Image 1: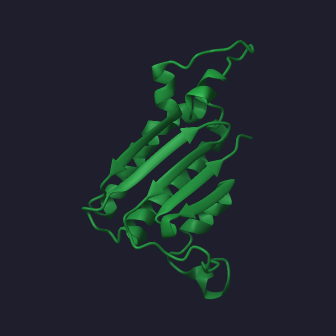
Image 2: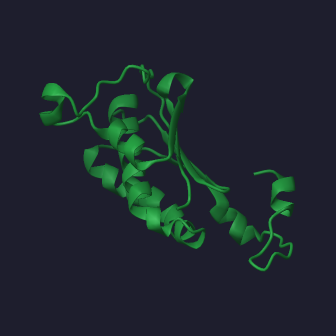
Image 3: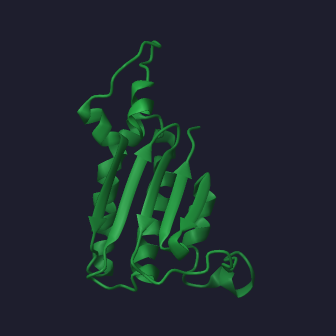
Length: 161
C-alpha cells in the first residue's frame, strides 16, 4: 500500500483518518516458515492464521474466515509437499495485505509447475483419488487465483461479501 493510498483512507463517518502503526501492522505482513515434516504443517498453518485472523474480522472479512483459512492451509501444504518437495531447509513465504479485498500469497522454492494444464479432480477416476484437490479447493473458495514465477508464487484474493 502506498503512502498516498494511506492518506486517502477515511474513517466510518467520512472524515479523513490516519493509519496508526498498529493498524498498519495488520494491513500487510509477511512470515517465512520452514516446516520440518507433515506433522509440523498444522503448526505452520496455525502460525500464519494467527497473524491474520483478528484483522480478517476487523476488516469485514469475518464471513469468509473459513474459506480463507481452508485456502491458506491448502496453499501452504501444496507449497511444502509439491513445491519444496518436503525439504526442511526450503522456506515457504506467506504474505498478506488488505485493500478493498484481502489477498494472501504463498511462495516456495520448488521447480514450479504447469498451472495452465491441471487435471480436473471432479472427472473420472480422479474423483476417488486420495489427493489432487488442493488447487481446485482454492479456486472454488477464492474470488481470484493466479500464479507467477512458473507456479512458485500463488496469489489468492477474496472480495468482501
